[in-house]
Amino acid sequence: MALASSGAFGFWPAAQGVGNNILCGDASELWVSPSGSDTGAGSAQDPFRTILRARDEVRSKIANGCPEDLTVWIHPGTYWVGDKLNFNLADSRPANTTTYSGIPGLPRPQLLGADAPLGGWQFSHMAGPDGTVPVMKAELGVGVTVQSLYALTGT
Image (cartoon, rainbow, N blue to C red; front, side, top):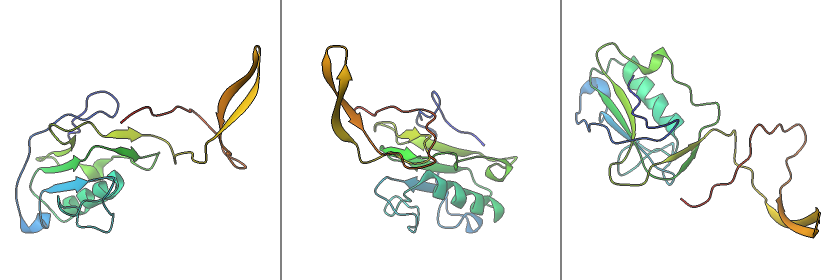
């Protein structure tokens, strides 16, 4: 499987394929958008919401014998992939490629490896060496482990 990548999860344009082979279903291209739906068709007009759903559709096409190269076009936006997005032998074929790519000319999609975004942030204050300082706080809940924490600034 070819994963067009620049850095850990930055995507660059890949060759755009076309086709409508009976073994490939409706198309050899799938689309993903933060505003899509995982019950959608995965088309440009009705994209999937998650890369995980697109990966599962790719696996289905491969299992059904699709002989074409497959491309998953990922719209700009933030995607929470966590540890659920794994690729293995079910995602590849000896003679064809599967490419996951951002859309040429648009901002790169952001893939974040958290199980879920942490919400409910509130402004607060805490004691500092020079008086009180502003801070942000959020409730984690019982049994939650944090491996890394950072803020997204901008799009």
